[in-house]
Length: 123
Image (cartoon, rainbow, N blue to C red; front, top):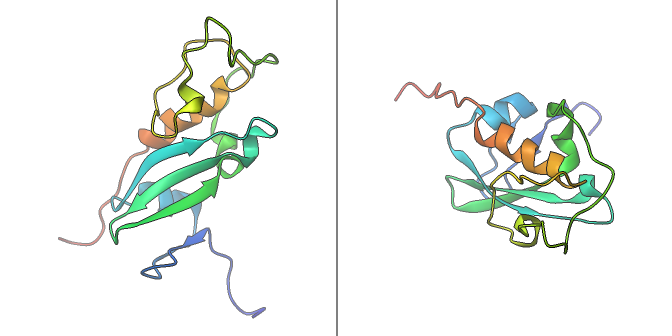
């Protein structure tokens, strides 16, 4: 299928196609609902999105980490007294106040959560 143009994501249930990451993030029928950390490679963590067709789509965090332009800390605070443990709970999407290696992904979550939605369906 060399003629098929590249797409960002396709819903396995309803076959909705998002041709770009921007189109995906702007879709009012999508909500970010979770994050599953991968401590071995933070880009391999998964962001979970619920679609209006009642399915959940998982996308690697690495597809979005270029949206963040702040500091990335070298040390992980997971398991320390100062760590609130947000990364250990898939449904917790709050930012983390700790200067931790994982913190930048929590900031990416905030960028995605606050991405402007565009409703071009004409409803």
